[in-house]
Image (cartoon, rainbow, N blue to C red):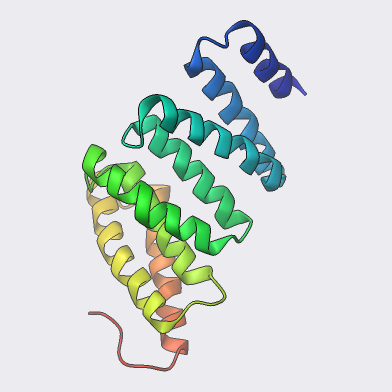
Length: 177
């Protein structure tokens, strides 16, 4: 109720200040997602992303971050195709251009794409190989940029192990080197 009231106040009294409205809306959406109300959070996240893109363009860091939040909510709701398309076709190219390949947001978008390729129940062996390739790129970058003990680095290492375990269980040719 407090975050909802804050958003209502921001919309009413500070509607001209998009940054504050975005922040209030993002805080509410994050809280709803953490409480497991991903469907309601997704509505707010989509609205925030659309407004960010309309105001700042698709190649703005705040728009990329808002889009990444949408993608995470889609993944949590297991809406695989839409999340894959958003990450691969819109967010990742924009993040690479604006932020570079070593930026934490770019690496997070890549890892989210690997998550989809691993957890989508309709995945193929090729999807697993793509996930492995992505994580073979992300993991050493995170080690170099964030350090080996950082939680994001550990997450990449663990996900790469999970992908390799699934590949070992899936019939087909050998994995990537």
